[in-house]
Length: 392
Image (cartoon, rainbow, N blue to C red):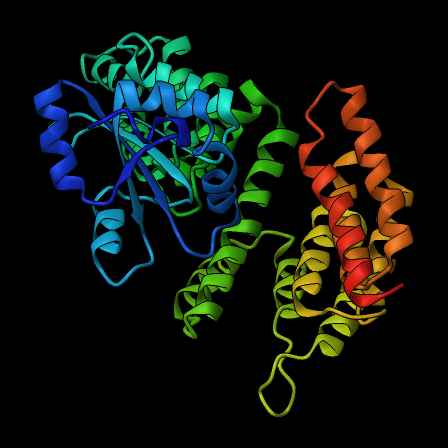
């Protein structure tokens, strides 16, 4: 490989097999960018980060780099499945045999991408080293925290679940109910109907002693709420709600006091009109009625409904109900985390002045916390762009 392309940033290939051969000969790792045509952060990486000379200088020297499109006609789709890619972009480092050495999901900046490469190259820090340590039997608490967090960050959820379940099965009754094991359950996001979750439900009294009743009960309640919600969403996408309905029936049989509340929440997302078309008006009417009854129980109800409505509408005051939902929430609980959804619904309603005010509040907060304002600056710019395009 000549040096001619170096000033343009990372030189990418498109054939993984050839790149693995080359990597073996050169004793290098292969860096793979798994992306899709529709993924925004993927496009940002390709436009703003990969072309930087500082990035190219590092990656072209240390790695053979490959781009794999996971929504192409087949080659990339198959590779995405083979490597169990579950989020985009996934940035993966492979050895010459094609085995994973390190992996993460998300779009870092130039410095972050270089740090990621350094971690992948460091046999003391990369995922492969954690994996070897796990396989050799290290079960120290500090190590396990690191191991499972690393898998979850890389969206290797299936591996995290499998390894956790195998570990859980080896524990004594006291160890299972320890606050550390409970913490690991949260890290790997143990789902309802899994063996460890079933055990937690059947032995709640033991966990009440170590973790506290409030925390245990709210963890169980929350887990069911979002587990079933995701099943409903997936079922609607695939036009098959069989699994959702089956699990909902199993959930009902457990006689939790919040069953009716959850069913009412899921029902809001069934907003087809008589022609079987999605209807934002029906969604708003149902959503407003639901929040009037249950909105105070869980702030996430408001966020979830608002974000759904934002996807359904675009135009001057087309989804005012969502603005009202968010105003009530922010009045009640001015948590800065909620401002993002508030901005989003204002933007989708073409309420530029209000959206700008909220964006400025987010920016002030980020400056106070010494965090990057890159994302919110882009949103502020998007208001200016939209004003030019749509007026107002």
